[in-house]
Image (spheres, one colour):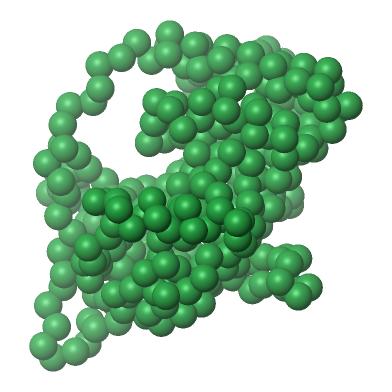
Length: 352
């Protein structure tokens, strides 16, 4: 129901903090009476780590380009000039291309026609919390679209995961051949754009759980706690799991290129609250602490420090002994018999 991206990560793994963290938050898809619980949530967390030798992750490039387009539309609707930066293969925002872009947008029939009061499930949660003691307040309910109750997609998931693994491996090999043969072993914006266009990222089949592909593992750390976004849904209630947020933190990070991380940080730092927003309409509205040198973004801190843990959080690690993974990368990792070697010397499915 809601996706957040934090830079750097909020969670740590054996004390390591990652460059970024994606949090996919869901309400359970069964009623409280069926589940025997009250409004429990599940959040899947996926780390991202930038590596100089990593190929740009295709789905993240697609997200970045869509985000940049939305950023342009919001600023235009608010009467603000666009941010004059470029990103390889994306919607152009250079000054000499701005007029052409504005002409295209002026004739578009898809321009936003206004926004509803609540844009995300998180807006509803925050609204209910803020006004819970008001005498005239009644809780706003979240209604699921009918499509969310449809049966799960019929697919041979074992074969599909094997195909995705092979495809990502081939893409990485292609990127490194292009980088070595045509760009002197360096990552350049020209290489990034050529690679993106060659693979037709704008046309790739969308997959709602795109972070779960890039991470290439089924194994995770699990615990019960609360959300990290105010009002921190999931506060502990004695003798009940009412409102609990069940975390699943994937063991491996998505490998991304530093250019992708840089643009993610800029997009977070330059966020503008859209027209019609309940908070700071058309004003800078980032939750991050941003350090700049002039107009250049130096550092972005959009992560809240996590609190201490207790036994009541039910921490555990789900790995090879619990089930056989569909990912061939996981199966190779699971062949390492020595637990200390697997957990501490080679904790990821890559790099060894």
